[in-house]
Image (cartoon, rainbow, N blue to C red; front, side, top):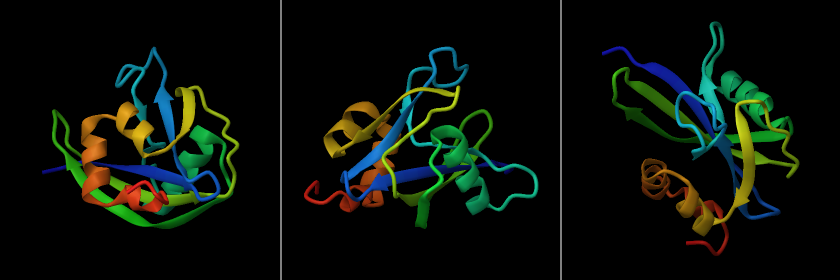
Length: 138
């Protein structure tokens, strides 16, 4: 099986004790108006961590970031399967400047994440204990 590789960032801010979520644009051909984590495809010649830094910079304007570790890897089956490498990242800022790909952002606590994110992402977060990074949220 061939699968595309996608990198996603789970960006948390210790000071705010929240995760960053971004909302896809209304006119997006895939996932219009849905909430997600910043990320995207790996470009030729990039390693996943380089792609993650580029995607974070392009989609959120955040450059002051610490990539903590790979949070999890998951395979999404569909017409064309893709492998997601999700990185846990710490933002040292709370300032976000969105690209044209997204129309809104929010620094969200666990309750807001559960309300906004698709069930599949929440299931991955729960399985991989992502919410443990939010003090007092577990």
